[in-house]
Length: 402
Picture 1 (cartoon, one colour):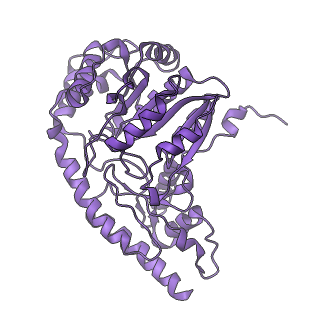
Picture 2: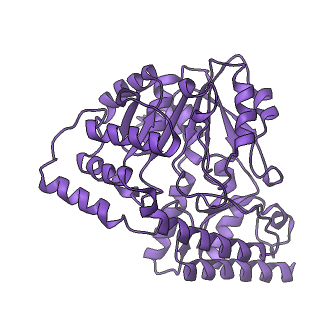
Picture 3: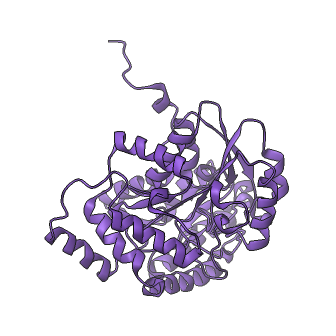
């Protein structure tokens, strides 16, 4: 029977490469293969006990019913207090909405703001799902490329050149997934000088990695002159608080945008988990020093991992100031003779490393950066050290053969 029940929008959508590599890793492990996965962006720490205890109390106190779609009032208050405490930003609860993870916050936002054909500026490298969510909402992602020679940061001149009559939105993350790059004050000032000429562009600042910063402070573009009323901050509990499975994200921005997101969320999912909301309150109201032990551990791993990766032939690395990823450029490796094996791009390279080294990583093509790969160092150092040595052995073996 000739039929196709699947919509064209799904047929043209790409699977998340990070989730795809994680799935392949699990499948190989299930077959008994010795696989180290550096593909997923998930802290290897457990949720802090004081947050777990808040979740347990919520269950015991029977917070098991529907909540307002926007989130509990005390959660919205906690988010507002956190934004004031950490960034000096004054948001009222009506400017905030909680969702099932920051990913849903971004999806709600794109569906709420974008009309078919609207263009969204996406500095590359970018988080894998930006492009597909924009396409799903009918928008067009316009990539602005920045390589390791620019520390993976798009210049104000590039930003200005990319703005056109159909530009509706700019979305970026700092600290960045996948590069760990962070925008500094002078760079954000240069961006805002450009954006001030184009007041109709909505700016989306993805700050999910804000707490995982090592060498410089996290700065929100919403704090810069003229930006507060046209910026949407997206954040959540997954990365800084090791709460990936709790699925609690949030968005703060202009009231009309939040109201539109609320309308969409009300039809698609309603509110996030009542238990996750109560647990999140405990994390948001806690002193950020309570999670510093995770940040300190990530910094130690970054330093060790960066030193080890720099020692791999063909890898060019910019040491990142934030997040928990390394994003080496492996373009040189793609010019080598791999003993008859096809290694023409980062996808082939990652497949070879999975097959011969037993190490899973994510090709840079998924992030708009062909010729790079992403390695997560959210794992114990003994595992990371083993992974790097495996990669190095395979590369040195093929390099010697070539």
